[in-house]
Amino acid sequence: MLLTTPNLTAPHGFSLRAGGVSAGVYAGLNLDDRPLNGHQDDPLAVAENRARLTAALGFGPQQLSRLDQVHGLDVVRARAGVQTADAQVTDQPGLLLAIGTADCYPLLLEDPDAGVLGAAHAGWRGTLGDIAGRSVRAMTALGARPERIRAAVGPGICAAQYQVGPEVAARFEEADLGEFVTPGLQLDLCAANLHLLTRAGLRPEHLWASGRCSTEPDFYSYRRDGGVTGRMWAVIGALDVYPDAAYPDSGGTA
Image 1 (cartoon, rainbow, N blue to C red):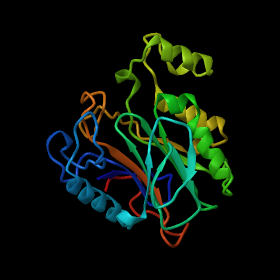
Image 2 (spheres, one colour):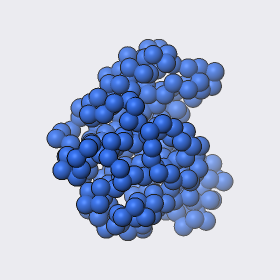
Image 3 (spheres, rainbow, N blue to C red):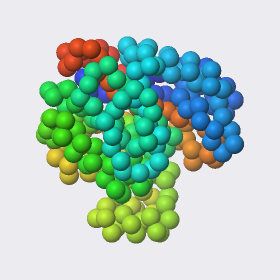
Image 4 (cartoon, rainbow, N blue to C red):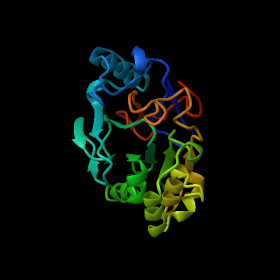
């Protein structure tokens, strides 16, 4: 159900498509019940999928802090319920921060010493606007320190499957991120976000990337599926005791 990484100690994961009850084009662990392009998954199936995911990490659905993501650059303080933003941070236990993706890259961040967590949604617009660095700075305002922050970049569309137009390529060049666009206009968002995290002060040894492409069968992909597909979640949260509550199965799948 979840991909995890050994560099994060808080309960966390990047959801796979397997392990859910949705059917049809959403078959599997779809976690989004919004109408998209005239289509919508069964809300009861999505509720069951969310209950399974949160329970796997020791949380309940009522502890979810979710975002209505708009490909913007706002970073908010996490709280139970839904806010409009593309990144969230917290220093409070008892919340499970969620980011939804279906090709864009999810970023999970943690300062285990300060007990500060973050989660961000990085598509090409968010990457261009440095949503990674903005999230780091928002965590720092809560007591985190960049050199202590650990970050994980989950599955997203890989450069080999992501060709962009010349206008987007030019904007990355103007933002001093042109090295992440190939001469064939293939955009490497994963590498760009790892670069931005390093630029924000994170140590290279505190960075991790899944190396998985969202166009693989294990995931939902907006581009592969023509816009009618489900959504994965990247989640991270602190239980009542933190930072002593480490995720026991880090480094594998759950």
